[in-house]
Image (tube, rainbow, N blue to C red; front, side, top):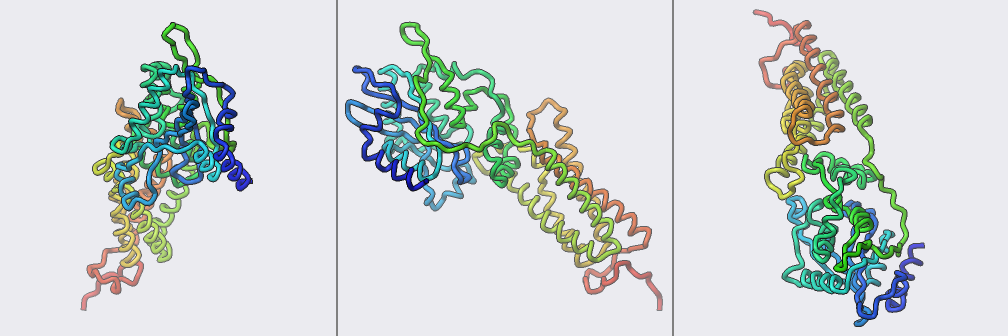
Length: 437
């Protein structure tokens, strides 16, 4: 099916003059050679394309041109791509291509494409073309990309608002249907790793109350906002901004309308993790296998959690990702977890008495989660991190309780710390009482 669609689009590009007239059944007025359409592309399989895309199409029937203006162009081959991405300094630019090439490209990626014919006046259409042509000049075309506040969709939104004299902004002042975080999580829920990265990395800025104007960072929401917008002409008449709509490429969109409700799933995973840590800590006093297993879990888990905490600090302090600033997940993925590998290795090599030392660090981690939960009751910038609290709360609490009981058991059994630091001198589970010669 896909090769057939691609072949069709190639033929469409060759016969662009005839097909252009058939796309939307609204002829151009004799004194209005320009026709403007907002194009909305559905999501792709790559994580970068989960949010969808959009562009502006301007057809000039007098000159026979058919150009698509695309603010979402960047280079996958850039040697600094990953570095710029993680620093929040990735450069995108405005490019132009033919409608035939656009159709062929999105057909080859098996993505949908929807067109909205806009009811702009001839003067507004001409101004939009001048605006986009000016932005497409080499010295103007590049900009620092931001997924929420300065992207391919917000650039088109601002361009349309410019030529409508601010009327689009006025039409999009109603409260948003949901937060920016919820939108980001719902469109990435089918790719769990991306969903988890956004859940961890996004701070409270994306939980603020916004209107439909800010919501239009998503192409599909700009499509919806334009669909419901109305413009007032110079003669005082009010007309819809969209004259007609047509789907040019079909593809089913499996994205959710609301973010997934995975609080219970995270809670169950946290409880199971907490029970496992509790059991291993309690058994480690008497059983070498439990001690070794706990040591491995603390080493691996501590590295992962601690490094993620360092990453959150770095995003706040060293990058331009404003949506990651003041991230309260630092209380849940604390850099203090980097001490756990030290305890884990010593526990596996030196003896069960190390588990008693886990009390301090595990209690600190548990208290940190409790503080994150307590912040919900204060009138500060709120952050929706309930799923992470549901996981790390039981997890650290289980480790804390297990280490406390293990320390008590070790004290009752008389497990004393060996004086030697050589692990070869600590082969028994419990230290033998000293004898005098």
